[in-house]
Image 1 (cartoon, rainbow, N blue to C red):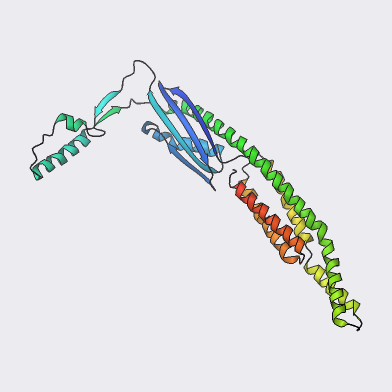
Image 2 (cartoon, rainbow, N blue to C red):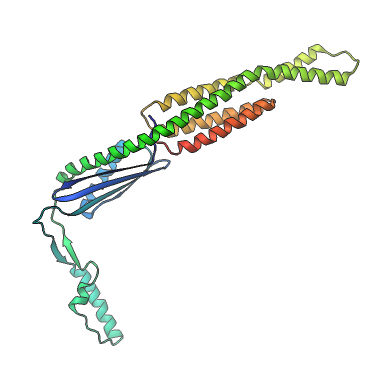
Length: 294
């Protein structure tokens, strides 16, 4: 099943009388990158959060934001604390400025309490093991929602990929049907050209047949067509699997492009050359599309 790398998931719950919400955004990326933003009190849980995400996703830039809001209980009150080291540092600098520039302004309580982070709300100690037991359930729900969105978008992308695979197969069949005619057309053109050049002199049919045989061997694209068809079958099979398939498909597209180049270089036929151009155009569109899938 194809999954897009872009999506969004959210979930929330009350944990220890506080509302905890988790938002997950997923963007395109060649590999898996995880960025976590969480409250300071939850910082020790970051490795666990990343491990959970790694277990669920294989590719994409995944941004996780965990918020812990105000207490939900009516009687809860935060305990205020003074950040004395910060206040002392500010007071020392202000005193030095006052003395250096002979300032008359007073360093009062209001000025000191106005310093950012001079007064903080003390966090009560929490049992992180207990919190993680509840938090991971919220994380799983957010990841479920993200995965559902990625799967929905992946279904749309998958249909487009299947349509393009069908188009590639039709192009290949046209080349396969045209290929035998190339040799006979070459033989006819060569024979006519030799007769024009030789005039009334007899034509060496054996030598002419030898030249045609050499050309047929050099321009034989049967092997490339068979390999290209094999890649199409493999790609269809991969797209039906439940694994992360983006990089596998990328590899197959490179192989198909290589076969298309070889077909184009070996075949002297203008129509086949044009079909090869059409194939490479579709392969380019497929490469752009798979940048969006996991």
